[in-house]
Image (cartoon, rainbow over all chains, first blue to last red; front, side, top):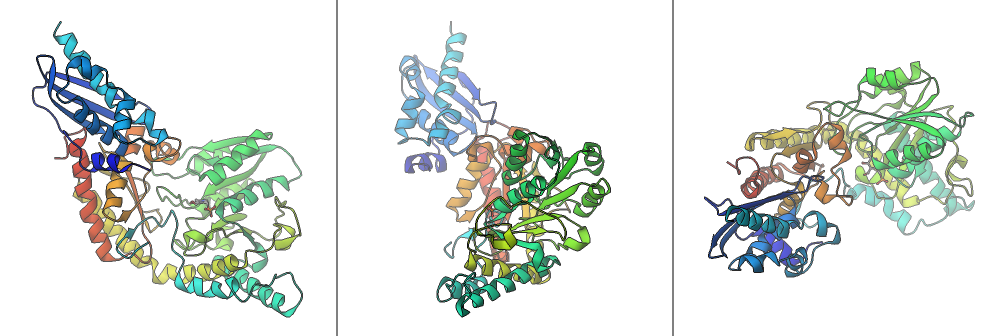
Length: 122
Length: 390
Ligand SMILES: Cc1ncc(COP(=O)(O)O)c(C=O)c1O
């Protein structure tokens, strides 16, 4: 049901864990099933220098979190804001249809973190 | 299943026992005659079916004319509930079931609800038990049938069926029980408990898939749902699934003896597994009743992690298990049973069901006791909740 790539990111997640003194934190959840995703950013000159995540959820939730950290690392905030749920799914070689909405929250979590940063720095 | 895999999903299904397969083989090969044919080959198959019916009956302390062969647990539930209700002269009234039934019962009772009957879905307590006073309050003058699962397929809670049936009969209400998970796990004597209708299925007891039976007590009429040539005493038409019937007979006979030979060992392994899981990690909780539970069922939940992620990790290590997490269901809803025993969707998320069988070994229990805590720790370390696996 999951692609090889999803399984790889799920079994060996990149950039997982808590970040100390992050510049921004974004958190999103899915109230019906209970999934929760937390994204931490370290930002220098509007560039994402480091990114970490913590996720309470299924295989797809963990894999999409891991994927977005790879996609966002090194990008400017404006570039990172362009990342969509579809980008995440495409880079994972697809997700099962039922998981597209419920577990594909990582783009939202990244956006929430960037918005958190923008709020603090205006 | 290859040898190096550890199969702990026996409430999902079981392998066919080699002796069951051996009993079936002639009826998949040379004994292919239609049991309704009058020539010698047909009569031989008919005799074999009669023998299997007797095996099923004996295991339940019933008589062979109480047993109707069906296509499985689902059909038995449908026939038991609809067949008994449709045969009553009143064509309306009230049906009681619970919030922890298998969909084969839930949907069937809902179907009656769509066709003019009132329905009540009884809540259960936090252990998954139907409470007698709650049931007593729910029974009305026009209650026709109560259908209650004997042993729950998820959390494993075993109901006090004898007391439930006594109460129902005092109020002149019929009782059907879905014993698909309970048969060959706990002793069942239909005469002793006095049940009116009981459903069972082959593939949960080392028999084949696509075969089951409905017990109907003496004197109780049911209306057939499947019409045709009048097989199964005119109650369930269709040329008999002969290999299935023979396999179910053998499986029931073996299941009955297994209650005293195999089941104590399975239960001891289950007890060790549960104890080990509960002790290995903090914030691990038992689902279901501590004692009144199916002897092969271990059902626990771990805070801060999700069941599908746990299952996939176990699968990678060669361990087959189940969960009630929303993420692993087609509907993306948490298991109705886990919600019925009072868990929130977040709590239901971290559930793990391990159901043991007679082929499991102590070494496999050791392996699982090593694998599960390590995975829980790894997933907790990724989780934003709790204290990250410490
Ligand atoms: C409690 C219960 N009832 C009914 C069924 C359905 O049985 P079958 O698969 O034989 O239709 C099952 C099987 O999952 C079950 O566990």
